Length: 470
Image (cartoon, rainbow, N blue to C red; front, top):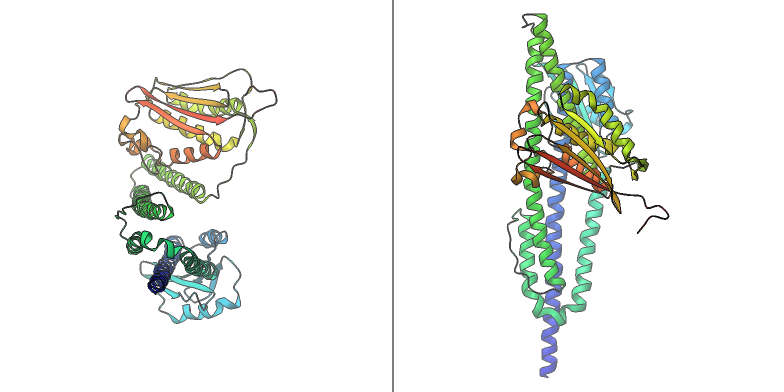
């Protein structure tokens, strides 16, 4: 009788644990589900509204056919689309053909206040598009409206996957707990409850949590994974904020110059042709700075998304290096810097994307020239090892402080002494270089001594030929 009673208690406790796990997983899943949908939709709508606002701002400054075509062209390669109305409600530009699905939104545009920027539709469950509108205003005069369309199909697809993952998680929890809960109930109850609260804390945005994890079993590994996830999420949030702040700062300064000098020229506030030429040179220089930053951000985005592809071929790295140095020689000579290459006479054949490797080498050499005084020198040395090729790029510049060396690969990080605008650079180049080298299955390192110079070492794997020594 006692045995039956004990078995009954175990069964009841086991069923209770199964139920608790199901409820916990479901609750956390629902929290993440609604949190994800709200954040995802809010992000999508905000980005769409911001994109439309940017187009409207651009058109308000230059309401010409060229700008209209430029706006439409920008959206042709994107998932979003754009339609531009004039002040009479007539369509004057579009990135894709108008379909019947667009018609009801067109009527909504005409029925809403002309000068109001707003979201026209966010009902992703029942509509084909999320729609926003932004007025084109200049000196409070209404020129037209920019209407942005974002298809809801990706949202529905993502939500469907999320639902499937949550349902799978619930069923998985039932199956796993049903098989093992009766044997492990006492051992896993306490840590699982702690993990439940931990995941709830993470969902609520509290990432500073500490889980007491003991042992090496699956439960302990889960606890460590949750703790690691919390740290990663915290780091992601902090770096994301810092990155956005840095990008905003990097863009704000040149844009301020562009706007200021453009207004000076536009209002005719110049005293001489020399002054006009000076202002135009500044505008050109700052435009190039913004263009380089945007290009670097675009490449960094492709690298981090995994959509960056290499076109590797069998190339003689010596030829690539010599060809690049020959291109850079005039710039080095203008700065009164000696630039030399030391390489073996025989070919060094590796599997490499020549264009991307030129980009890496150019970035490092350009950095060296910017931080090397006239009369200094830069040397590029190539050597062959048993399994690869090493490229050493040395300069006699100002060097990098030892405590800052670990951070030079971070996005938008620049050594304090090189933050002045006259030295240029976006702070993204070395981060891109490192990822390109690693995509080649290579390594990049740096040694530097403040006041004496810096040396970058790039190691790339060599193609193994028949007869090569192992």
